[in-house]
Length: 124
Image 1 (cartoon, rainbow, N blue to C red):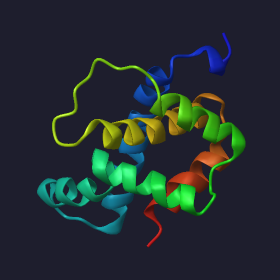
Image 2: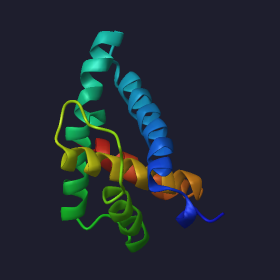
Image 3: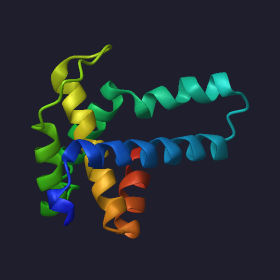
Image 4: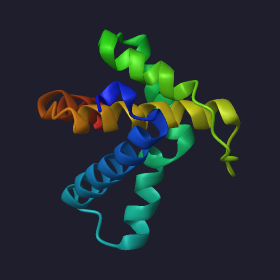
């Protein structure tokens, strides 16, 4: 099975775990002392609204490669039975698309590009 044959929501499932782990590690290394503060700080990165903003910012910067754009668009257009709780469907789909790109990079072992993407996300 090639990566293009994998359901984009499955890629997003993997990407979500990779992204969450990266953000948690990043925030711990920044020195947040309590779980409460870590949780509050993580919302600026891991909520669907934040991820949607990140996708738009990166697209405006023409950050994504053609291959990444393929996975981004495919995931954004994927059919899902999940109803988002705290945002609209479009915002949720944008967040899912970012996670799918992260999952794609992880699964294809493009570690340098994955690191570049994740560092760009937390860039201040």
